[in-house]
Image (cartoon, rainbow, N blue to C red; front, side, top):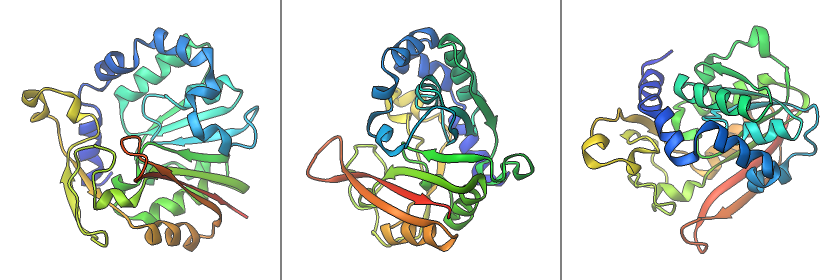
Length: 251
């Protein structure tokens, strides 16, 4: 595990379980909400899946299971890969309360055990903004490609690169030149929800943000066939781009 990954692990284990309980509900409360309408809990991402029943899904940086558990409720066989043991605790407790089983591997995404998982999954799925945690986009995409079976699909939804130059999602992250390749330190995603006193104590993350062309070329260069690239409005201002979803297939 490299130094910046250790940095991210420290940040994502800072009070994380308590954060999810406060903001997503106790595991049994969240499980009940997920079970009432799991497809709705997947939001727009549900439409990118061809089916759910029996589909092996790798949920990359799946955090507290907010999308993995609805997928499991719909019949998918889901394994979360995430760096935080606190996230694992919340996700597994919620899955148990929802009466579904999910896998959860606490690991560096770039060090997933390919002896076990190479060519294992039908779908690799990520959302919520994760690419900026990886300083080597090619290495990340090579891992996604390796995890998939031939014919498997990558559903990669992330923050729109427009957010490099404008804080369109109100995440309180620094802005920069659109074409910057700078690696910079910034707060982890939930820091803004804490008091200033606690906020100062939360370990920082080390980020690298990408342009649209870097993302598209990163997908294509490892062998994926890019099938579509959708842009979605910011949840803060529908006139601005906030997120994107790239769909790619391992032929």
